[in-house]
Amino acid sequence: DIPGRMSLLQAIATAKGLDDIANPRSVVVFRTVEGRRRAGVADLAAIRSGRSADPQIYAGDVIVVGSSRAKSWLRNVIGVTPLFNLLLL
Image 1 (cartoon, helix red, strand yellow):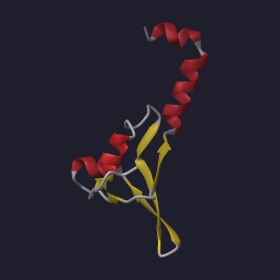
Image 2 (cartoon, rainbow, N blue to C red):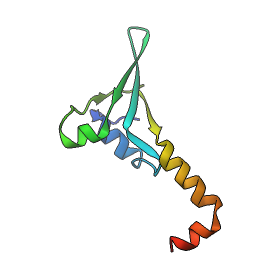
Image 3 (tube, rainbow, N blue to C red):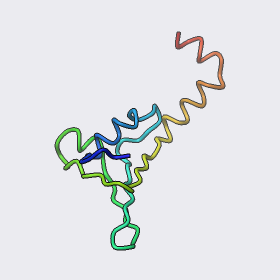
């Protein structure tokens, strides 16, 4: 639930941030406007650096954060390869 005005960065923070395989450059906000589903793509890195505006989030919006294939692959390799786990200690 949105307690009032909230930006995309605030919404992400309220959701406890991004996980370790999230791609902050690939965030999609879905919104229904006049009965039509719309989508907007945001780059959290650009928002954080001030290169892009931090969009307003409204009740009913759905935020989807893409995942990084490289980070996902690495996490999977580390998770199934005990030798890597030992080397990372």
